[in-house]
Length: 147
Image 1 (spheres, rainbow, N blue to C red):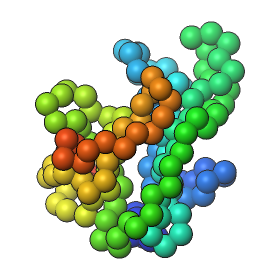
Image 2 (tube, one colour):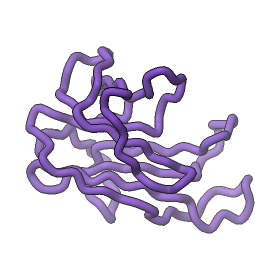
Image 3 (tube, rainbow, N blue to C red):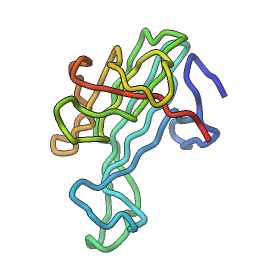
């Protein structure tokens, strides 16, 4: 489904509405089989040409082995001026680094599986619990075709 230039998932979060993306991760964890992660990043459309990105952290963990009971928002940003031919992607990596994930960018729809610099870019900083603007020329992103 299209909304404001974004491909919107049929999934939604009751507190934010239709999602553009949802990504969970747990820095340093090697066992990806655990059902819950320490961090949750989400994005959703805001108005005609807007985008809201949020970063949440797990709360109420009884122990490291136990699942999180919920998430609390630690940061969010509103991005305006997103063009109709642009979309958000979290399939990005930082130039000169093997770091993949925890990055996002807004770029034109481009060619699927072809990496290019986004127009705008952010890092979901789990240490400082902030969403940080980063130089777009240091990031490469691609658009992944839906299955």
